[in-house]
Image 1: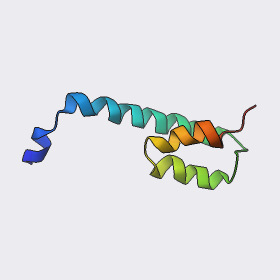
Image 2: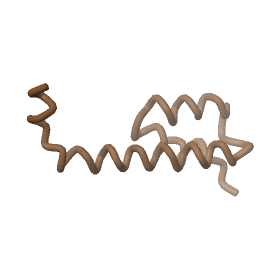
Image 3: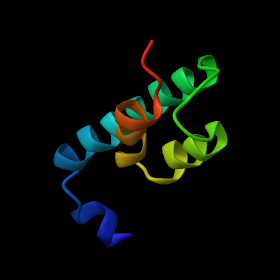
Length: 66
């Protein structure tokens, strides 16, 4: 329990919030989009399991431009 008290949450909390927002927005976009660059299901796993970089990859590479 001492480890959790030693963490500077003022620095880490914004990164956790940004990661959560990115993931939620990417999942909403993935759900609404019918076509992606590559397998749709692969992009779902990338978004979920690659934390912050996964949603960024999805928006840069996986999302089809309209």
